[in-house]
Length: 104
Image (tube, rainbow, N blue to C red; front, side, top):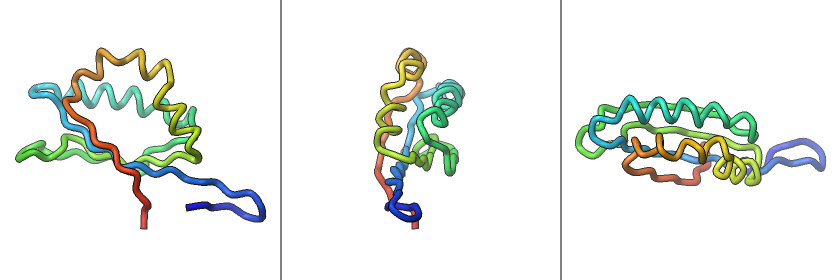
């Protein structure tokens, strides 16, 4: 959804992220996410909401709503070398689902 005034508009990118931790790795998942989410601001991104479940019955360990001011910012975050350098720590995450969303 474009926002802005006059002729300048910003195309927001909003994403819902669902993360499942490997068995026994919930704390490691949280630590990894703390590190990578700290990079969002460098790419015009921000966490709108971050919540955790007990992970029981197949529920994701963590749910995030993230917003970027542009697609370029989102792409830049995904390819940020500081983020990709943490790939070994990312092994705490068993599975991730990303969904583009529009907040209503």
